[in-house]
Image 1 (tube, rainbow, N blue to C red):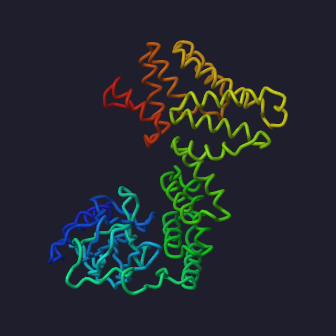
Image 2: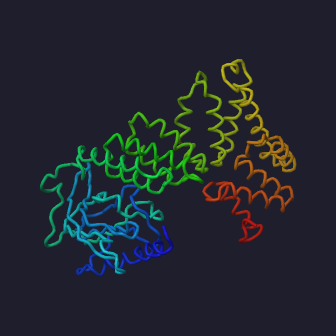
Image 3: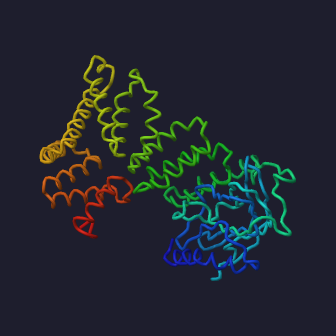
Length: 432
C-alpha cells in the first residue's frame, strides 16, 4: 500500500463513525461498531459476530469496502442467527466516504426486530469487505438499532416466516467461483504474494463448502510459514484456528493441528502449546516411537508457560526411560537423555538459587553448541537472570536485550519478563 493510499485508508476508517451517523435521521443507538482509525486490509479472516442481550430493532447495517481505494459496487448484506438461520439478504445502497471515493460503504435498513442472541454479519462481497487487524481481523461493520419493537419493524424469522437455511452462494455457484479463483491464482505472478494471498482468502470466504477451500487453507499456511520472510505467524495462527473451527472432522485436521502447534511454539504461545500437548500426552504410551521427543517438547512448553515443577517431573520421566532397559526402542535415545539431564541440572540450580554455578553451566552449554544450534528463549532468559543475580548487571542487560531480539514481537512470556527487567535496569532504552 502506498503512503497516499495508507493515509486515505486511515482517514476513511476515521470517517466511518461520522458518515454513517449523519445518515441516520432517527439517531438510533449504536449496537455494534468495530471501526477505528487504523489501516485496513481486505477479506475478513474471522466471522464478524455481535451479541444482543435483549431484543432490538435493527435499523441500519453499514459495511466498509475500502478495496485499495477503489470502493465496490454494492451487493447485499444478511445476518445469520441461531442454527445457521439466514435473515435477509437485503440489497445495499452505496455511500461515499466523504472524500470522493464512491461505493466505500454499503448500507441496508432492514428495520427488523431480533431476539437476544449472537448473530453473524454476511456480506456478499467478502473479497472487497475491509477488515481491521487491530480489531481481530473481522469485517468492519456498524450496526444501529433501538430497544424492543419499532412501528415498522418486521418480526425475527424465528417467530414468523420460515427462511430457507442456505448460504449466499449455492454449492454449485461456490464450485464455479472456486474454479474461477484457482485459475486466477495459477495465472498470477508466483512472486506476487499479496495478490495470491488475496485470492486464497477470497476463495476461503466465498466458497467454504468446496474442496478447493480446504486446499486454499493448506496452501496459504505454506505461504505464511515458508514463503514470506519473516514468516507471517499471526496470520498463520489465525488461519489455522479458523480452519480447525470450520473443518474439525476433515482428513487434513490432524496435520493442520500440528501446524498450529508449531506456530504457537515458534511464537512462544506456551499456554496454548501446553493445552495441545496435554491431550496428546495423556494418550501417549511408551510403545510410541516418538514417546521421548514428545515428552521433551511437552516439558519445554511447560517451562515456557512458567510451570517449572511440572516440567522437571517430565524431564525425570524421560531420563528414567532413556537410561533404562527400553532405551534401545527409541531412535536418538542418548541425545534425549542428555537433553533431559541438562534441563534437570539447570532447574535444580535455579531452585537452589546457585547463580554463579548457573552462569558457568550456561556459558559452557552455549560454548559447546554446534554451528547451526541456537539457544532457546527460555535458556537466554534464565542466563540473563542468573547474570543479574550474580551481580553482573552489564552482562544481564546484554542478555535481556538478546531475549527481546529473539522475540521482537514481544509476544512470549520470556520477552515480556526481559522487557520488564530492562525497564527497571536501563529505563526506556531497551535495545541499545
